[in-house]
Figure 1 (spheres, rainbow, N blue to C red):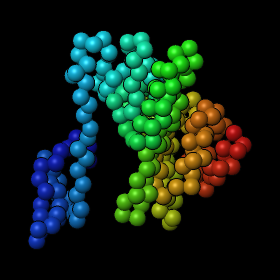
Figure 2: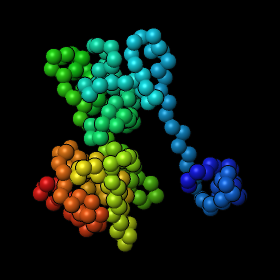
Figure 3: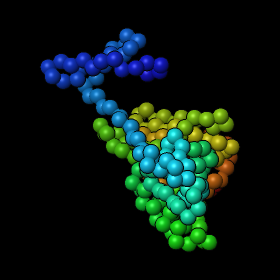
Length: 212
């Protein structure tokens, strides 16, 4: 729904039946889920010198804060996406582990710091569908989005391409492609005719990675 808001939830026999919106739409539904979001408590850092942004504690590419020698990791941080350079946060446990290890290692070895290069990957299964979001899957100037739909197989992908490079993807029932797509993003390699090839549902992603 665009430019609209939830007004009410209708129930029948004690169960969800529909939602009604501010603009007058009524949409039947037998299940309703609400995303609550996530907030970060950074108020306690006020006056410490550690800079915070709208999404969390600001860190550089080595996960160091604005105060030399102080590092941050996990859900608490705001950093540049390694594929697009756009500010974002990472909110899953895999990144918490990876970034925690990196922040600790960089704090212990200030002269041998390594850069954060984790490709974001979220996945979940609901109602018989496998959903995944990889990389930076946000619209932006200079980013082209193309879709590949195989309706018969109930498989869908939306790819985000910048300068011929794959920087993000949203997948439905394309589990076997997830690892290969992350490899493709990590390679930072421009794909010849990227938009045309990725828009074809029959494109073999593993072969594309091998030949790119």
